[in-house]
Each structure stands twice: as structure tokens, then as C-alpha cells.
Amino acid sequence: MQSTQRDPHRRRVLLFSIDGCRPDALQQAAAPTIHALAATGAVAWNARTVMPSCTLPCHTSMLRGVDTPRHGITSNDFHPLVRPVPSLFEHSKAHGLRTAFFLNWEQLRDLAGPGFVDVGCHLAEAIEPGSDEWIADRAIEQRAFADADFTFVYLGHTDEVGHRHGWMSQPYLNAIAGADRCIARIMDAWQAAGWLENTTVCVVSDHGGHERTHGTDHDDDILIPFILSGAGIKHGVSLPDGIRVFDTCCTLAHLLSLPQDRTWEGRVVQEALVS
Image (cartoon, rainbow, N blue to C red):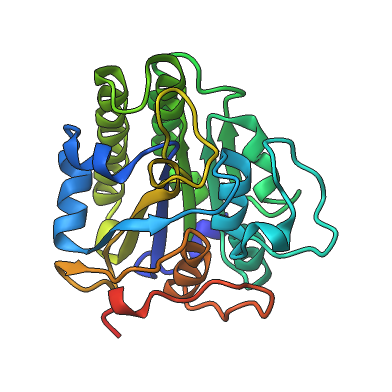
């Protein structure tokens, strides 16, 4: 198998997206693993997403490195881009890397075109309690088979709880705590595999929320956390204002030693990097 012939000590990137996670909620929630990543890495508690602040447009920007006007996805219904922009999945595969994608909201499947994910698993919806845990189980079970350079784990239940019970409600904060436990389990599995020392972990969200909705340009909807920790990242750094969700793609590509695609509009967050 291809994975048995590859350097186990190469740089890896592990990206977690917690849907609908406001930075102020993350700071309040019982989320010790993410709090430790922020304390030992580089963090912006006031990064900004794109408009409309909805899941598919925001993730398209996150993974394709461009703002909404460039990719043209303005709702949670996907349509092919008139002028294609490579996602981090596609860019990684084009340069010989392996990718893995675990998600519990099916509409995000179009973030990677056919043939650009080596190992993937999804649930159609993140509605039911336990869906984030199911995704974490799949990521752990399939990690050795995937042997991925870039792994993206999407945890969508927090957003579902926000819509049901309200952003900043106790059930919503509990859902963030549940996502934190999923991240802890996955990181423990990476540690057991001997990978964590050479892994950069990124925790980000697509958007925030207010009351029981989101999609506006209000700070409650627009502000997101942006956390980098691990290999190649400075220790205990507060990042400057101005980080955008589409900087995620560019920064993670750099950490994977990939060239920047000329169509990307984001920037590499150099302030977080050791060199």
C-alpha cells in the first residue's frame, strides 16, 4: 500500500472546523483541549468570515482561499464555479499529497472534486446528538488507512444546537464542549500513531450566530476563532487583527510546503509561523 512507503515523520496538517462556533462562546465553554491549543500556539479570537455568513459559502472560502465574490457560492446550495479555484484538497493532490475528509453535513462534499480525497466518510446531517462523535470515530478508525498529509474534520452539531436552542445557550456551550472532546480523542489517536509531534493543528469556525440564526454582517455572525498549534507554530502568540477565513487555505498550504495558487486571495499568516 502507498502509505507504507512514505515518511512517517513528514509534516501533517489536521484541520478542525466547528460549525457555528463563536469565539466568545469557545472561550466560555468547557473546552480544555482547544484552550490548550490556543495557549500553546497562535490564536486570533477576532478573525472574520465572509458574507453571507452561512456554512457552504464560508467553507468554500476557507478551503478555496477566496472571498465570496470570487467563488460565487452565496447560499447552502452548491453550483459549479464559473471560474474554478482549486481547494486545498485539489491543490494537495495535484502536488502528490494524500488527503482525508470526515464530515457530517453532506453539502460540503463539493469542497473536493471527484478523485481528490483519498479517504473520506460522511453523514448526511449533523442533526442528531452523537453525530460529531460518529465522525470522530471514523477519523480515528481510518487514520492509518488514510495516512493523510492533510486531514479535514468537520464537526457540525454545534450549529444544529444553535438553531434549536440559541447561540450562547447552555446546550450550545455544551455542544462546543462535545466538539472539544472529539478533537481531544482524534489528537490522542494521532499521538498514539507517532504523528502528533510533526502535525500542525488548526481549529477554526465558518461563522458565528445570534439568537437562533446567522447569515448577517453583525459581529456575532462574522467573528470566528482561528487557532494554530503544533509543528511550525510559535508558542503563545496573539495574532493581529485582519485575519480572514480564506487565509486558512493559504496558511495550511504553506505549512504543507505547497506553493500558493495564483488564484487564491488569502495570505499566509506569517505572524504565527516559526519561520
